[in-house]
Image: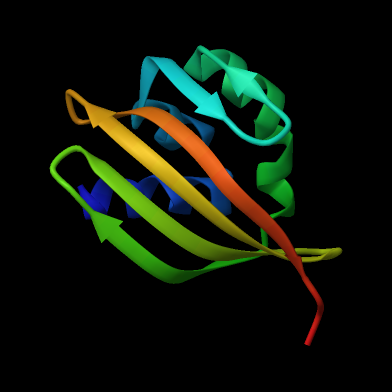
Length: 109
């Protein structure tokens, strides 16, 4: 599962939509403080525009269960950085849900 999680986020850094899509269940549920999507295609159509602006990701922590993961990472963008905490659930080796628990703007160092 760790490899699938890492590959999913690396696809965003690499702007590889096909690789990201292959790891998502078609009926993905994505929930964040500002969005709710019930389809992998709709989620990617709405959010993929941000992939080109991600310069780097730094893992802060990862916790894995049988069919779920909790991750925290720092994402670097041209305008600054964000710390993001997400909970992912898996079904049939694909990401079935992503719940963004926190997004925190970080000051440039």
